[in-house]
Image 1 (cartoon, rainbow, N blue to C red):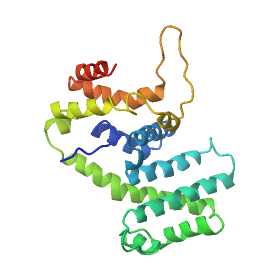
Image 2: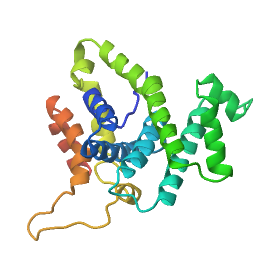
Image 3: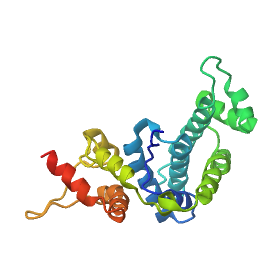
Image 4: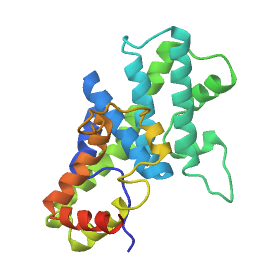
Length: 244
C-alpha cells in the first residue's frame, strides 16, 4: 500500500494546530495559520479541503479582531470570499463528475443549511452581506468543519494503539522513504514557488555564519526531530553527501 503523504510531521502536531486554530488566543491562531502555510507548501494541491477552509476562515476572523481592520468594506469582502470559497469547495468535493448537481442540492446532502447557500449567492452575485450576517456564517462554517472533519479525525487519532505510529516514530522502511523525499527537489532546498508561498524574499546573513529564517525553522524542525528520534540523521547526511 502506498504511503499517504501529509504536511504535518506527526499526529501531535496535527492535534496542536487543530487546537490552536480553534483557540481564543490570537498568537496561537497566528502560529497555527503559519504552520498551515508550511503544510500547503509541502502538499501543494493535496491539502485537505477542510484544513484549507478552516485556515482561510480563521484568518479573516483573526483580521476582524481589530488590530488589522482597515475598513468595513474590505472586511466584508474578505468574509464573503472566504465563505463563498468554503461552500464551493465542500460541495464540489462531493460532486459526481459524471452528473453535476446544483450547489443547493449538494449542500443539503452535506447538512449545510439553505441560508448558507443563499449567503454564498448573495456574496458573489449581489451586494455584500452585512458584517453580523457574515460573522454568523463564519461561526457556523467553523463549527461545521469542526464537527465533520476535525473531531472525527481526532477520534481516529485516539484509536491508534501501540507501535511506531502511536509514538510518532519511523521504522526502517519509513525512514528510507522520508530521507528519499527530503533529498528530492523542493524539500530541503526550497523552490522559488515555495519561498514565495512562505513570504520569504530576502535573508539576513552574518559574514561568518548564514542564518536560517524562522519560517524555515518552523517548517523543518518537527521533521528533523522525528528523524533524530528514529536515528535516521546519519542516513540523511549520507544521501546528501552522495548528491554533492
